[in-house]
Image (cartoon, rainbow, N blue to C red; front, top):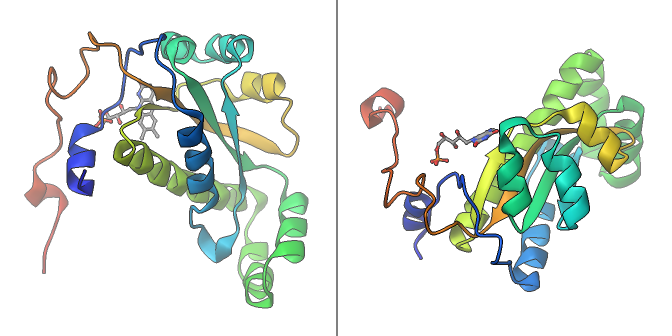
Length: 199
Ligand SMILES: Cc1cc2nc3c(=O)[nH]c(=O)nc-3n(C[C@H](O)[C@H](O)[C@H](O)COP(=O)(O)O)c2cc1C
C-alpha cells in the first residue's frame, strides 16, 4: 500500500476484536521500528513496554479512564515512557553518545531547568509515536493512541524506575462493528489552505 493510502486508511480504533491477534513477527518488527526512531542528538530518552499479558493489561486498563475497554480487547498495549531522572539521562549520554552529542548536552541542554529538560525528553518520545502510528498504518495493524491514562498508576503497575509513562497505544484488529472506522465515519480534518501554506 502507498504511504498516502495507509494514512487515509488508518484511524483511531475504538473497538477491538479480541479474538484476533497480531503475528509475533509483526510485533518484533514494531519493536525494531521504535528502536530506529530518530531523536535529537540521538538522545533516545525513552523506554517502550509491550504488554500482552492479560492480567497486566487488565490492571493497566483499570488505570486508563475511558480507554479501559480498548485495552482489554486489543492484542498488545504499548506504553511510551520518558526518562524522568536527569542524572540517569546524563549517564546515558556520556556512556553511549559521541563527543559532539556530549558537547551539545553540556553546552545547551544542561543549561535548561530540570522541568524544561523533561519537556524536551517528552518531545522526543512524541516523535516516536508518529513513527509508530505510521508503521502500524503501513503494516495494516489497527491502533489507538491514548493520553487518557493515569501515569502514576502505570508507574506502580510497571514498576518503573527513572521513567514515567506519557501515553499508551493499543494495537490489534478492529471489531467489524467499530463505528469509528473510515468506511462508517469519514476522516475529518481542517481545510488544507488553513493548515498548509506554500510560498
Ligand atoms: C497524543 C494523542 C492522544 C490521544 N488520546 C486519545 C485517548 O486517550 N483516547 C482515544 O480514544 N483517542 C485518543 N486520541 C485519538 C485522537 O482523538 C485522534 O487521533 C484524532 O481525533 C484524529 O482521528 P484519527 O486518528 O481517527 O484520524 C489521541 C491521539 C493522539 C495523537
